[in-house]
Length: 304
Image (tube, rainbow, N blue to C red; front, side):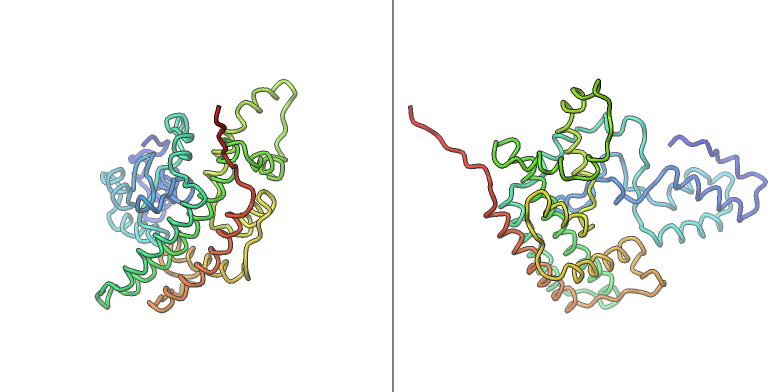
């Protein structure tokens, strides 16, 4: 990958300076895939449309092996892996030109009913995995991964259902949730443009909305619940704070390699995953029921 930092720049630097320069290079070129890499639970995780996954040790050794001390590479690798094992490339010119987001969204977003069916299917797979015999030395890691997968199943359901409602109704001619979403979303309200740009902005609005929804962090429940309320008139059930606490644990497992912000390991037992499944099911079910009864396009045919 292109970089203004060259391997030979390490010459003459002490270990601390080498580490700082390599770390800067790494973050210029690689990022947490959660930043912008599409995630599809049905496909088994991230869809590496810009390449990857990349691993810190491999990339550091491949680029700096000629000039860096191996001990410095080892130390930096350990620090980077605390945030995650897999990395995606940072944004490059042409990334979004080379990828067809319209087809990605329309081709991967389920209908309203399918969204909940897929959610139940994903939960069923997790429940089956919970019955698998696992060696005691890897049980904690195994249950942490399943804990994260339960949250991911909820994310995917909320994303698929909302986008299907907003974009599907626009396509089929029902209640105009597309217009409601655009009018109520602060990100669009705060945009300014001249009158000369009006036609261009309006013409590209659907594409802009699709890209915006693709980039929403769907486990940001305060933001997502507001979107559901202002666009669909739908209220999230129960105590949202309980689910947000779960999201925070998920964040520490994924982004801090299973440690909380104080560096304390997070231990997850089978019973905790089972309890989370029930909590998430009870959260998702009323949302699905509300989605089923709010206005959805009805297609009729006439006999000539």
